[in-house]
Image (cartoon, rainbow, N blue to C red; front, side, top):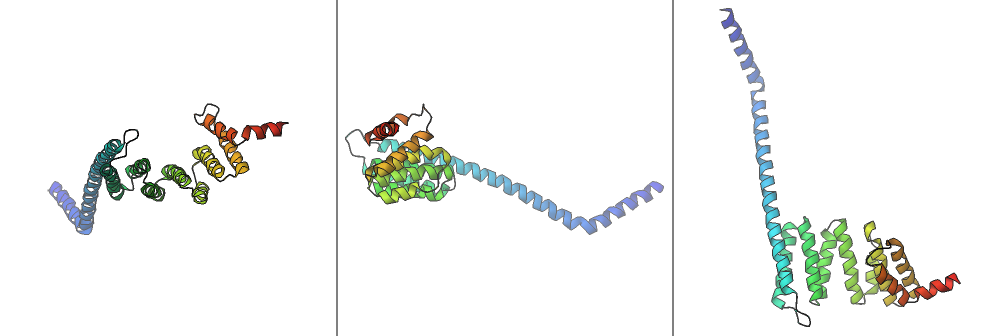
Length: 228
């Protein structure tokens, strides 16, 4: 009998507890299950998006390679349009991922090779507007090169005076030297090339080219005169 009374007391206590907290426990369980289901859905969707983005990017690479013309031949307009169409799809669907930024840079290079500077500039500007700091730096540097080709020197310099990651300092200074040299601002160009060299290690692959450009505008002569 004592056991029955104890058991009945436990049941009564449980009923009282459930009456008081049962709804709360049920809602906590429901929220936890919904959260778990939502997390699994999000991870599955993320994997599917990554797979789709990767497949689209592979298509872009293949289109760029198909669009590459033989030496002396003009690129096929249909292939060039395909490159830009795929890049646009990637940018619209996966613009927040690295695939969007890589697609913009690839499409810009393809457009530049096809002498479509307007499209090249638009793709590079997209990368500047949507990329992370590294892609922004690359895009700014490449866009400054396009502007240099268009003789839009002031725009190129304004772009080069923007924000770049530290590892791009030598390339930025080198490009500034190119723009200033094209403007026939030789003292400023020499200073820029010298700054580029100062940022480069002795075994840097671009060092010799920068030195040649510096020598071509009288850099070596200036240094000799200074030493004398």
